Length: 369
Length: 242
Ligand code: HEM
Ligand code: HEM
Ligand code: HEM
Ligand code: SF4
Ligand code: SF4
Image (cartoon, rainbow over all chains, first blue to last red; front, side, top):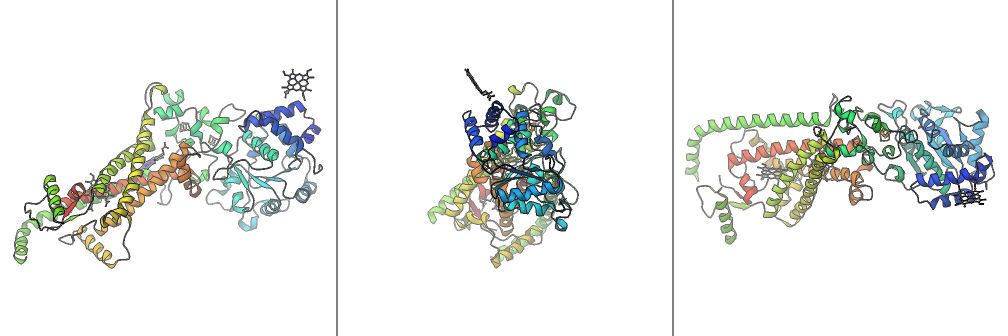
């Protein structure tokens, strides 16, 4: 473990990264954060002078897809720089230390960098049975999370698991898996949802927080605005076909070959906030829609529980059988329509019969008044 | 008053709905003021446009031939929906203003007087009338209690809901810096996944359709049975003779 005054720059120089690469890293980061070219200089100065911010990366109930994504960041440089920084501290999947030695790092960091370290959480804690569904280092993960969160500066909730709950929290959620913000309520939390989040988004966020020592601007849901303020639909390259009214109707029809909009195939791009259509995946190679499949909405709250992946709207289960909004609506309107027709018929019938008697009645009431 | 009655009569005869027996001392009540009547028809038109374009937005259109750059069909449908949405919203605000400034009948669709005994009595009466048990409907000046209940729950609440969710969905396109997001973005605090907002907005369509079915039927039926309905929303007066 380094000294308290150690900088990020001195660490990566020690790791064998040249100054030239360091400067490249700064300009790449500035670009991916959408900052001006001049900000590259600010980043370089900050990383050279400010004390390094340690990052503790913990894993709860998860599939490691966030880590897998992270280590595939498009630019090897970014990966090297950020990983070498993180592995210094604690990440039980990629660090060298193991067992008691590894656990000792946690206590040490907690004491030494009180209120100065970043806690990055991949996955989430299950709360049922006192958290016994996820044991880490001999203790329920939720305890480890609470104790490490207590002295942290800020928390990064990686992926849909930590942000929303994801598959382990899907109904009926037997283990009571909970997103981080439901368990830790007294610390700033940044949600970086996605299953997994995009590598470039992850590295950019780690770099932003460690460089500037604060969270980037967040939206109402606690997601960084710079990557999650627009929907897939807003930047989708098939959007012109959406506006034109050109849709794929079958997976193998002419429209599919022509690359038309996947709205009718249940594309969830119009309700999904993520950077896929701008940053894309695997080093900018492609993203689902570019490969001909609609968006699932993997970065949205409860995306496993919203019915079919091939329906834009949520399946409504409250009516016993699964139904969608249109089926329910048509049934209700149809029933009312029938009732109206029946009512009209009875009214007409009554009226006819009454007309015959009515003549007598009317005369009687005229006499009365 | 007498001046008004004369004016009333004039309008009545011009619309051609007055009965054969046209005496000056008839019970004519001026129920719907001019702004409310204008609002009614503008609102009805906006809702028709919203319902039809909304269905198209929900299911999408058959694929247009040709280049994407030659077509903007779906875009125009959405544009019509949003324009009608603005008309509906502005109209709704004006209607609230009418309720505050206008006659007591103008307030009726905004509340249900469940705390009044006579409301429940009248409601019972009306239900009997619609259940074809009573021979004659009560002479209600404004809405009858059943209508008031339906107007409030199925129209007023639903319309307010559609405006709030509609503008929230609109804010997704106009962005987080837009005033629409500022005013209606809180919806996404309640329902973080906007897919649910789409689903509920879509369900609202069917509530409105059901309302229109019942409403138009009741209006026409009332007009035939008691000759005091449709004329009222056109001319404003309600003739309370037998
Ligand atoms: C005798 C002349 C020069 C010397 C000795 C020199 C030396 C250096 C050194 C030592 C570095 C750092 C490289 C590293 O840490 O890997 C550097 C970077 C750089 N130099 Fe020069 N330089 C010279 C001329 C120039 C000129 C004429 C330009 C511009 C026209 C220039 C532009 C740059 C830039 C843009 C970088 C950053 C490169 C990067 O990050 O990839 N240098 N130079
Ligand atoms: C009674 C009134 C309304 C009805 C019946 C109605 C109906 C609908 C329907 C059925 C949809 C399709 C939902 C889906 O399947 O995703 C829709 C979408 C939408 N509506 Fe409405 N709507 C109404 C009022 C409004 C208002 C006041 C606004 C505000 C401007 C609005 C804005 C929108 C927007 C932005 C969408 C989404 C369009 C898209 O995703 O491309 N609606 N509406
Ligand atoms: C052909 C279509 C329609 C006809 C013939 C019609 C007729 C009428 C009549 C006769 C009234 C007075 C009802 C009474 O006194 O109880 C009325 C009121 C009303 N109608 Fe319609 N209507 C039509 C369409 C619509 C539509 C599409 C809507 C909107 C969904 C609507 C919403 C209302 C509302 C909210 C009132 C209450 C007005 C108030 O008290 O301010 N109407 N309509
Ligand atoms: S493919 Fe999906 S994200 Fe792209 S324009 Fe169509 S609906 Fe929107
Ligand atoms: S396109 Fe949609 S489902 Fe695919 S990764 Fe992006 S947000 Fe997730």
